Image (tube, rainbow, N blue to C red; front, side, top):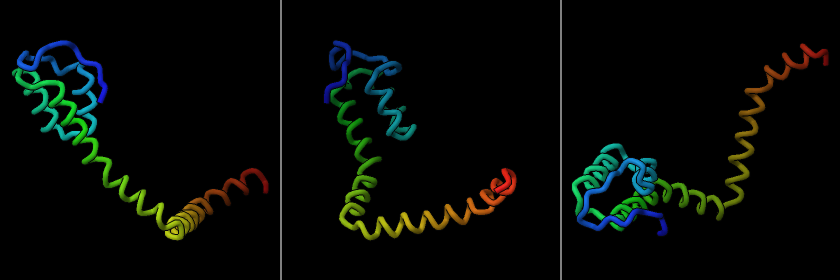
Length: 108
């Protein structure tokens, strides 16, 4: 994984705020996990390699279920068509009364 970092050594304390890895990690991790990473950075002995690994794990934990569902649906186009058809019915039912008001308002 290629994310630009500074040249601080493993044992050196680091500032998490503004650090690209930490900022990305906060998007995927829980608040507690992000707080833990910030504390690890501040105390030292926690390298960018550790942080990148944690980032990748958090990313996969968040997105893997969606990826698996997408792959499942890709193998079953008939189900996708059924889902889309059902959604279209709901959308039509919800928009029908509104469209009737619009047609009436514009004189159609």
